[in-house]
Length: 219
Image (cartoon, rainbow, N blue to C red; front, side, top):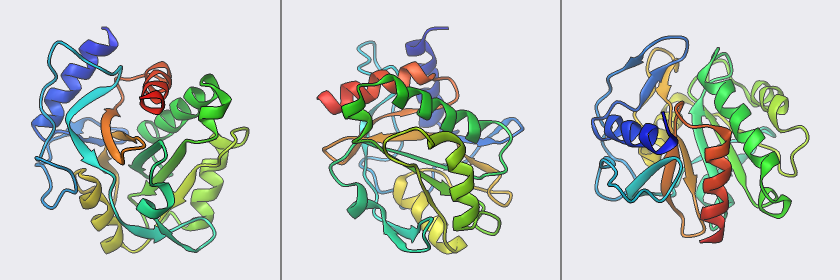
């Protein structure tokens, strides 16, 4: 199946509010969460003129505002720290057996494949959905498996459960369930305009991410 065919199928699922996947299990229905910080509600199905290799978001998601704790144990204001820079945002947990490590590995491969000057601009932020387990130290060790040779280290964020929930709502993804194991599979890409016009899921590849990073950074 082509990337555009996959992305249209994924967009349909997103429009129906099915953007939650259980790591190590089947996808599960999840209604669109209230309070999203993006314009116009859920994404709509793509038309024939797809712009991106990933999931086109004709109704862009705004770069969210939330503050969590980074790997150094310091407050991390997501919007302030990443504003105006190409940024990949993902919600998951370190004990995830499949979706999370695959997504982070795809991001790392994509960054190794783009122009080094672009790779130096890209911010990658992984927000845990299992804050009871994923301390700053645990997140740091986990992300080191993927970003060791990249110019900009991945940022892992944690916090109390309320703060994690607010971050998901601000980003416009469904709230994780089952102690964080049932979580959004979307990887959101924000551009210099502080909007996400494209997202990725398990149907996309590292090549899709690299191609759209290049397009977003260039346009």
